[in-house]
Length: 130
Picture 1 (spheres, rainbow, N blue to C red):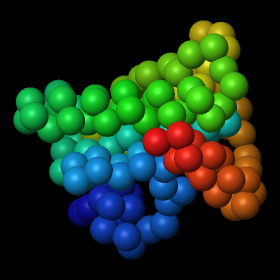
Picture 2: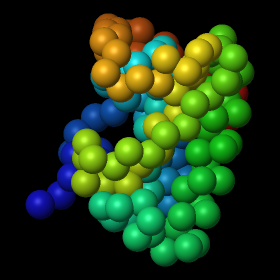
Picture 3: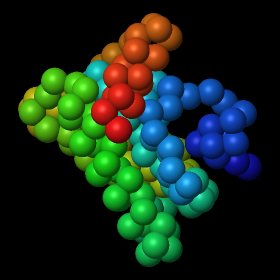
Picture 4: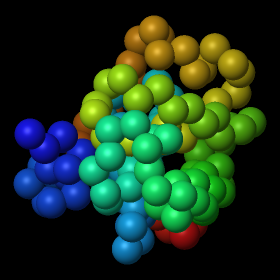
């Protein structure tokens, strides 16, 4: 069964896309910890990030770096936090989270809510720096 991310890649489920390359996709997390919280995924459906072929692993991380630089320009924050947990969705993914303190990365925190228009505005803002 295809993961929700595979369905997003296939265009069967919409997302608030920020960036896309031949091999990767970046889009807003719909249950964000902070404004601008992104997910960066490989287009190859692989459950565990360390099961990616070396080339795909490197492409994913270089793409995430490019997106993180744009994210830092778009969202006022001290840093872009990076985490890979890999339990929520069976498809390798990197969380890029604008943070001002370590506690901003606590996945037990309440998630933020945004309207569709706010999500679109955030995604467009980040994409404008790519």
